[in-house]
Image (cartoon, rainbow, N blue to C red; front, side, top):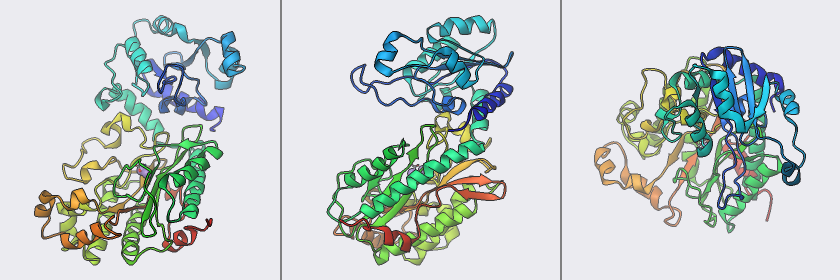
Length: 470
Ligand code: GLY
Ligand code: MN
Ligand code: MN
């Protein structure tokens, strides 16, 4: 967990970046069925950026006029001690967080109004709908967490993003620990793989590894022999000897910092000749894209580089035909690589995605209208301290490769008969998909792959698969 000095200096930087008071909400418990049965509490990421271990329901008022930070917490009651054990007093919390004052959460609206006078107050929408509605009522803003245009005031979002997008050493240290736990989870899953078990057994090993290390899944674990279904959260297939397992899973620390890693391996322990070819193309694309991460590099160019390596490879194995330039320009590669090469990562696995393209696309840059490239989530110039994923993949998706519209549009560029062979191999189950994903910190000198210890060389992966025995 970053130390108190880290949080204090982040709050100080924020106070000097804003010109009106700002109210931030941590969010509270969210019921999963009846009111008293709660989902695990997870504070809003911007709140986590400024405070260690926030309490449910916490709120904070940042006032640039006097440089104060007031933390609002629920009043302590005798029932707290009964149900939750001893709760630190407001005085303890003032010291623990190093804030100007701690006040009663029940008085939030009144206290904020008192301090504000006639000044404007701003806030941001968060995932907890009740906290968002309360904050919106206090500031009078038309907030909507599910519409990026209404997540908050533009300048406020940009000020927050500027800070959150530059990872301090304490944050990088947290991400390295998340990466290390994620490495353990992926290698355990590889080692426990064998034909005849169900996907969910491996999910148990992955998420059990997270839990044993005090972490939670940073997002819904994707573990599937149907890797071509990009966000496949079903885990009910039995593993066949000839299947490929795609695992996309990352640990999240109590601090909120996380990892996002994908690996793909053969159930039987040896890649088939076709899988070996495709794996080598994806790995080459991943390595080339990682190599390109350095200060000043435009993320869209990194994406295009990955597209080019994938296209070259698919031409070589006879799935595509023509010149790389023409194929990438027409978007033909997206029939096999239909998503962007990655996204920001930090406290959110897609960091600050709720803030929209305002913060992930540089001014003047907009989403491509082309299929595939339009899903690129990031188009900034990389700067030291920024952290992104690099995650190319090749997928054989029946709905894409048998789509009459695409078959007509890319008739001369894609060998659909060859693609059909991939769709029907593996006893008609199809090839599936291969993705390889790492988390990459941009540094002064280039980059640092935080997840480099998760095995990805083909021989290393093959050696691990099934090594735990029956
Ligand atoms: N885990 C989702 C993604 O890779 O973006
Ligand atoms: Mn990702
Ligand atoms: Mn992922």
